Length: 269
Image (cartoon, rainbow, N blue to C red):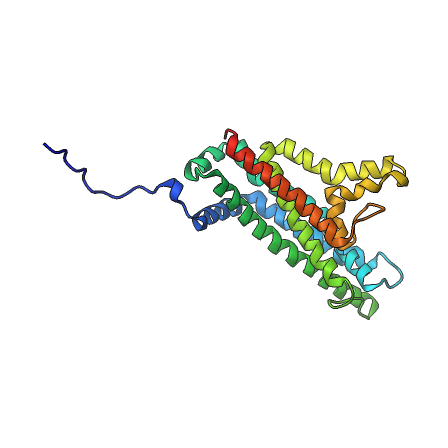
């Protein structure tokens, strides 16, 4: 006798057939449901805008050139980098520390799709936030300075101002993605935060203090100085041209993303 056909019933969803939209929606839900996400994003906004309003405009007694004023209003980005770097690292390490990564990979067995989903969601949030806060920092800094002095200092359209303001936001977003990729490679929150702090904050300062100026030429190749060249904030005595430095920072980030993709594909959860 022929085998009886199985009874018809509702079909269970196949995890491997998830769409990109579904993965992005899932990653957005995970990102916004963690309280630390909002604390770190709020910290980045407060630092970027706060420095522009309360510190930078009054730092120079003589009226600076427009591009110098624009750079001064964006110095808060140097501090808010740490907030976005921490958030980027924790996007991956938080799941590894809690064990949630196993559930994520069981739902999305195509591991690269999981990585692209996290990169897409975090990158969109970081870019939107950093550009908005950089523009707000410049605009509010200009308004604060105008209230103090009674005359304008700079505005969009002045030489190099747009590059500096938008460049600060672009660098802030890319450094956040740099942190996410590093977190995917290291998979440990403490180790990831220690590494990112050393690379972006400790080593540039140590080399700048310890080495004579004649031996500091290589500092322009460090990720922090390469990105800072785009908005005239690099601490190297021989800085790169703006877009060359930004391209190098993007190259570092792309290389880390490639390593993260390989590790995610070939490593254990």
